[in-house]
Length: 621
Image (cartoon, rainbow, N blue to C red; front, side):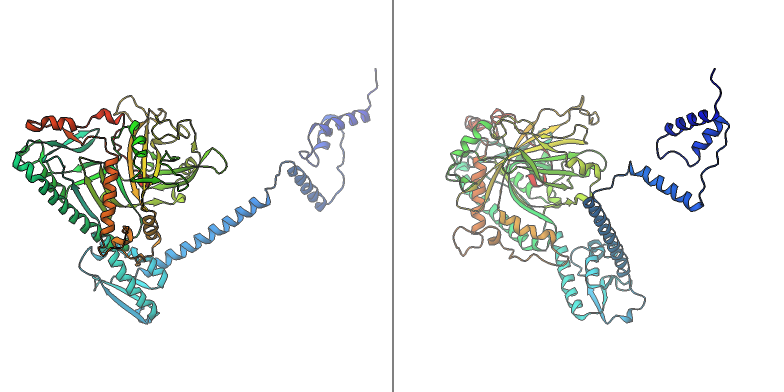
């Protein structure tokens, strides 16, 4: 039997203890404590003062951290640091401006220190001072910061704006800007011009009924028997109605264009072609089922009548392209390098609608274009917009709305719309991230606008999207002019549900698309002119000549300033006739003209599966 050897036992325990713990996790005296516990031998730890001990601990901790520490890249750190500094500077600047604004909204305690004093009498015409500018004149905050002056309402002078400053030159400019601000407010309150017109039919007199279709109320014409004398007098009567319609149209458009230069915001003018529907209207008199033509025309003039134009062309997809190819006297290729009207390459965009208390106040528009040197499509632009409520008439935010009901062609509307955009930074993070996950999936039929729709936009299934609308559009030029014709197909995708009253289920798939058609005529010059209004400072006016010739130039020089407008209206009517469903929108007649009316009645089958679309499409229509 081997003799007990304490030294050998000590060395064995020391080796096992030292190799059991990884480096960096051993304490200064851990090894000696373990040896003492297992062998009973006491070992005096190595000598060292306090500084040596602390240095040892520091070195061990640094070595232990080196295994796990990963330094960020220099560029990322620099970028993050610069962003943080810029963000702090911006926050400080905004905080300072807020403090100055609050001070400048009130009357100073020592007004005798200001060398320049001004009283601006607010005119009695139009909105009141506080209704127009706010309780504390908040609308004048940009002027307060710009001129470093106090702007407030004295209790003793409730109809005056009091201004206190130091610079006489600035005070004179401030007076002019206050006048312009009042003009802008008057323009906003009075420029909202609305008029609805109905074109007389060539075939004769009749009556108009209101038919409800898929939640819409659309006017429908019915021919009625006419005596020979009435038939002979009708052409003269119809010409008189057209003349009066033109007089109303000219007056409204001219007045609006002269006033719109003072309106600030995102403005956009388009002549849209589609289906005109009624939201608010007066019922026929004496409980009749329909209006007489003259009564219907007067009803449209009533102040409380509200309507709007929506995508709802009933043209058959199979005849659309042949009809466009044959319209060589009206159309020419959008791409000037092309020499024929063969179908141009479509443009694609999409409109997303979100659900939820906050998200329902938002819409996202996205445009797609082909990547350079590749066949794939990518998102090139996106916009966050504040939508109107479903069914809400557009003229509530439209400086101009001229709606024309045409039973023999297609309905059309000239509108200057005011759009409300959101900055992407104001959108919650989850929705901003959603906008970056949208993908475009190409397919074999996407180049043919008349083909059956196939979904192209892909996104995560759990996104809070209640509905999205894909737009496929082709463009032509109106021959000999600078106007552009855009014909668009809208494919509407909604989530399926067991019943209509069931709450929206975001786990439910999107159903088959429902197709709608619409068209627009516009001029890029309109976008350039009205685009200046978005960044227009408070109290300023747009710097262009606001007349008919600026927006509607004549083909040849003429002394008639409205000549260009009438040329434009004639083009719109020709396009409306090109995109009609064939026969006019009528119902079967009775009496002596029944056979003739039946021959001209519209057939729903001629429009395929096209339907009217109730959606706020923003810049997409």
